Image 1: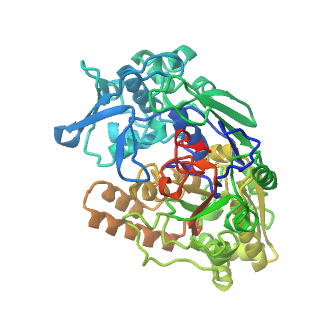
Image 2: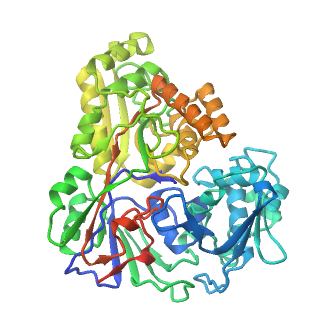
Length: 573
């Protein structure tokens, strides 16, 4: 998630005779923006904003997903056998409030993430690095204020010091994620956020920061500062006091436009510079080749998407009668491996590649980008096979599924044509097997899906993952471990898989880690916890007056995936 990823292809556009002026960037997308608080930012819609309002200690260098360079830090040293990191911080940096950034702000930011570490956030992975556990203090009683205080400190020289319980080779990459941004501590405390003191730290453990006061009125060090936001739009403007190079684009407007046709029309008129598209098939037909549009193709895919089959659904509204009587399903419907295998054989992978990706997609063997170490191309995959699907449905629940039928409701993200198409493919093929099978699919706002899926209230959803940092663990543990971020959404648990994943975390031996990940993938094929959605070959559009969005500048670790750059790197000519 790097956060929870949105399944859609994002367009880069700026019309030659645009209504939008050259100093303003207008973006239209289907998703809403769940939060502007870095402490809980863990989805691409939110991250694409916060990464431009706030800044991290380090960032990715150019288009590299592995090379890092200083941002709010100027340099760092590693001592104590790799367990102590000391950062020199940039001087002369101001927050949007006018407050000067100091080491105390950085210390507050990381301690706040460790204190709160809610289930909505990505702070589990920074907590693992700094405390040795991904849990917060409510779930792990060994976490004390003293542990948190000693893990992140400012020394007498004004340097920020991290003290790790054990070596973490990915710590620097973890610090580049926008959720680990430095926030304005004086300003935040003034709003009523955590005091930064031991006195009230327990009151903030696990607290939901999605609609925090800081989310409603952000103050970062980024090149852009927040102006206002409502249900349909967000406005940010260039920060005059920014320490770095002044951005060429003065204003950025993010608009929520649910209808694809409306977004396309706005793009073609020049009312919008960037829009969320409708998948390759739609975009190639309706956008590619238009005057002034440059088509970019062949971007590597660093995301992974799957259709989740929740083994413990906590939402009666999706379950109908709650029984296998043809009018519903029990909450544990997907706990039967035969049901999961049947659905895996029911999905038409090649049709999805043809209809959504226009032939430019690839079926993967596991929920890990095939460009990452640990990917095993030799693991078996499912294919569309109605006869095998029928066989497994007849075995499910001792034959009751096939005999009685079922009715199940599944949601997809509102405004996402690829997600809708995937669920409609599944619906058509499932219902064709047996007249007693009924799969209802319906749209749902992104922010609601995030919350309800986290709470186990979604039955079957298509959702994905973009990397927080470039390491196989960030995908494999997230999807397949019962302690991973996605576990509440699937409730699939395999003790042997958990053991293999923990062993992979305990070694720096690449060959051994790859062996263990291959074992996990083979076990996952047998157990079918997810329907693996084919990976797309990335593409984008840019109009010939948008500068800085060239393909060679695209970095997939940047949340603003329209351009793979920060806003400050863009300009219009």
